[in-house]
Amino acid sequence: MQFFIDTANLSEIEEAQAMGVVDGVTTNPSLMAKENIIGPDAIKAHYKAICNLVYDNVSAEVIATDFEGMIKEGRALAKIDDKIVVKVPMTKDGVKAIKYLSNQGIRTNCTLVFTTGQAILAAKAGASYVSPFIGRMDDISHHGMGLITQIAQVYQTFECTTKVLAASIRHTMHLIRCAEEGADVATAPFQVIEGLFNHPMTDIGLARFLSDFNEVNEGEESTEALKAEKNTLEEKIAIG
Ligand code: E4P
Image 1 (cartoon, rainbow, N blue to C red):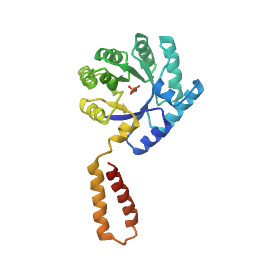
Image 2: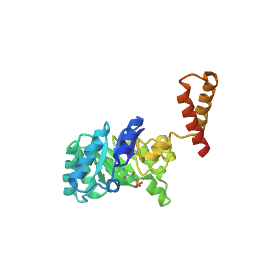
Image 3: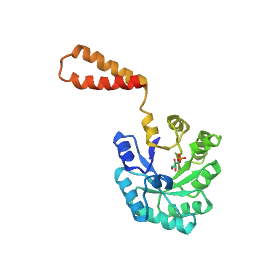
Image 4: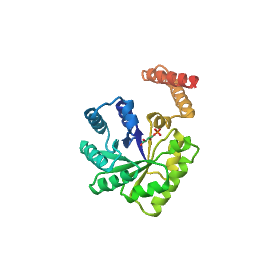
């Protein structure tokens, strides 16, 4: 399963990229607004800056809601960089625009998907990705993960080339379950991806390894750095 980072924040993208586990970026108008990116030129420049940070796959969402507007905007977004995937909402005009853009060889991500029926329509129109929103379904007491399972099964049955891009991910268990259920990609906020690193037993184990090493290497120059690291780990464990 690929990992995308769900943010428009350049520092987070840079940091995630440096961790070596991120394959792409998803943005949406809310995430762009959070970064205070205002006006078409600034938006374009920001997408370009994101593209410069990653190897491929930057989802950039259209704002227009009518077919003509979506294809105009979609084509302009695709021109910014080859890494752009045009994100289009699941509406009648959106599906029409996905068909048009994919016929032009432009990659698309159908967003705001909440049913398997919508995912089938997106695939039929030739979407490269479909984005079911797990967290927002859970928020209204629906089974977000069940949607991933069902779409993944249907796509497998019909040998669809459209990839399941699990979105609206709120915590690490969402990510792990997406991998179990056969999502091709999961997009998550920085903190959720970072959360996968954590386990107290890892911290305790590392502190013990360093302490055992230090006991027999006391006085060696290299132990100073190790002692400092051990102290940091012990502080971390004490904080809990
Ligand atoms: C990404 O493609 C989606 O826009 C995003 O995951 C939505 O997440 P939210 O439901 O937490 O806003």
